[in-house]
Image (cartoon, protein in one colour):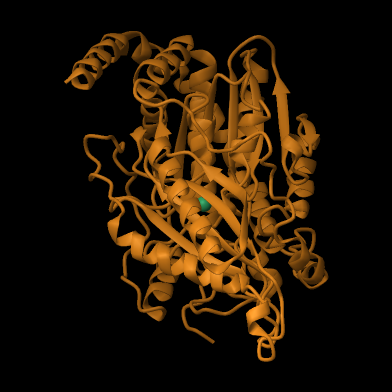
Length: 529
Ligand SMILES: [Zn+2]
């Protein structure tokens, strides 16, 4: 009831504020049109960036080429670059300061996923380099969008003497949920007033309130036993693999008695060397996901209790290392409302008949649900019109969301019906569908930046909502301790080995109009080959 009263009050306040806001919006339509034109001028650059990052195919913590490439473009456009922020070699910030005004943080993820290399633009599963990482979530499109939006906003702000500061940052190793809590801990957002994040989708929209996403702890349990001859003297050994197996069995039994909202999954990253040696060391890597700071912590503690019990039962010792953390997601209402109005103003990309034919060909060839590229933007997603959450995925943007007022804008760079974290989600990501979606997303971001820079009330409303609604029942409470450090060793060995091969496939915009051109893929390719 208190919540109801509070949100009614807030609603009334917002309605009362609507007159000056509307008056302002009118005044800024010309500015917004300029920003839209600025983004349109960068459509070619967006295509080059989306295709280039796709071609780099870099997984979490190994986004070196991506970092060098994107910061190079930003430096050329007058942004000040700081490399290696928060103790993470591939993390960076790019800032531009136009004097006293709001500081707006702009970010999106940049990493790929293991084993998901895919030739873009073909309606079939076909790896570009078998076994290599790839953009099977479409994270190659997000930062290109942000770069274009920032350059456009900068142009308009410069021309009209609009004061304020931009701070761009990349979501390094998002697929490992492994950096944003460290960014926050390093103080990257301490001077930020509001933050805008983007994520690829097949739809165009934004949301506010508790998103229903799960928070998460990524943690590795390493068991140490005693090696021995597995046949001659097994009694002298203590198997670390036994401990891993026992932990997993115990976890899977406990799973039945956990809330429906939890998600948990594991992989065994070290199960021993060869069968005739009792494994002296074994490692299992768990993701524990739940909906609130406390329930994430509780789930993680249950996992650690079970690990200890498995160690005890097998006569082994267990240690753990946190590899990543993600807070539950919570979007800021005033920002989301401003962004939603801008998304409506921008509208969906104008899909060509080729784009629609390509989407259909991919869906049909994969035997997925056939659904055209969307032609309408999404309604604003609110706690009232969303279905109650039964748990789900995570995004470490949550850590930033609980630090400064933040929204996620989802932009339409992918085709509907694809499977997430799967090669099928890579197929469209270096085609005109991805390019057009990123341009549309860049416009929505640029317009929302201008709203923030020119409307002090929007900033104060965003902060009031953050303090009085978002922080009412929960505060940011990550499980990270001072000892936890970013897991920058992840994927290094793989990339040291495979990078020379990947380099052969980097997109060269000076020679080819598009990456499809470079790969000799016609567009739209409608039949598998
Ligand atoms: Zn993602």
